Length: 489
Image (cartoon, rainbow, N blue to C red; front, side):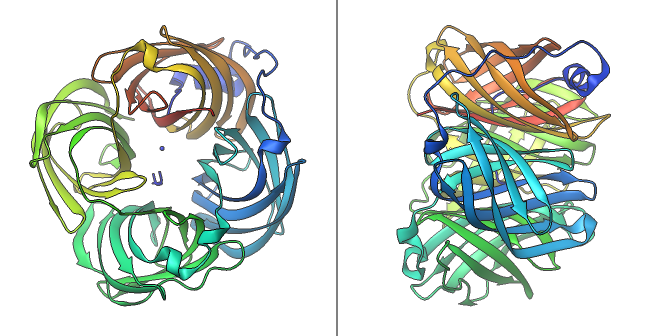
């Protein structure tokens, strides 16, 4: 999204996913995994969160687990919010097992009193991975991050945090919000602001009420967060990743939102950024990608480029973007114009610089979406994508429903990739699918690409922030998807 939170490298067209669901040609199975990962690479305390859909609609889950490095989850705690099924469960004990393959892909079973949750993830390092739910009951995407226990105290949370959360409101309409607030060493909010887009109804630049916010974190980095704005109090459960990053999940009857908090150390916006966002528009599911060039003096220069895909309105690409922005108190307002396409015309974005990137909320009545803009560094060519990468993709099919996947692949620096994908297509599971693909970067860090399995070819646009991090969207009819790919360490 969020998260939402939220995040980008291989996408699959409607034709591919229909076949993967068992309606056509056999799937091409990947070769045995190659690499140096083992169970020992997942060892310690980790915070996890993933968001997606189940039989009741929107679903989100977050928690903390202790991995012993030998394939066992010895202890943990989870929060589960599934409003369509009337389920809000907090402080649920969690145990389980896991197995890490040589290429960094892993499978785990989270055992709780509510039900068991099967997940797949790809480790990017010992500290970070990309995760999907991988069972027939639901599909979801998110991250898993090793926690820094020295940050499990209120003074470590003092300062200003920006946030980006999304999900559904009490009527199960899509909702997204962003903002920032400042707290002291005792966890009390002194000031802040919230921007909310509830199904196209905008409530912008609303002051946060001063008062108690963070409870003292427990031994696993878990605590509660209370935020009041415009007379509405929202209650969240948080899990500390480190002193700059927290995962949050709403635990009340106001809405069901989830996402991330990132520390705001600098409020500057200058230079070139890559950006994807996903959500809904008045025409259905929506995804957008940009290379956004700013001059540091309040202008979005017209060398910026936008691509967009709507699940019922088709896609458009290569649209020019220009506009202006202003930054006040750590909050930026963008007024941009997109030259054409399915999301063309005047557009409004609210942005909050943070250690996790520039968190972005779409502030238009016709689009409810969030994303993260990442500053570009370096120069770009096909050689920029070289080595071993992990990938996460989340999307929606016009005739079927939601899907999520993770992949591990190798890029050769010459425009070719090869790897393995695990796909959850509306609860129909396809593990170990062989993946090949191509990509062709221009000097601005934007690339056209294709991804192929034994079932078909897909078309994507990638946006490189650096040689180690790329975001992307798909440009095929009938499917909406956004993803992220990061280099394995």
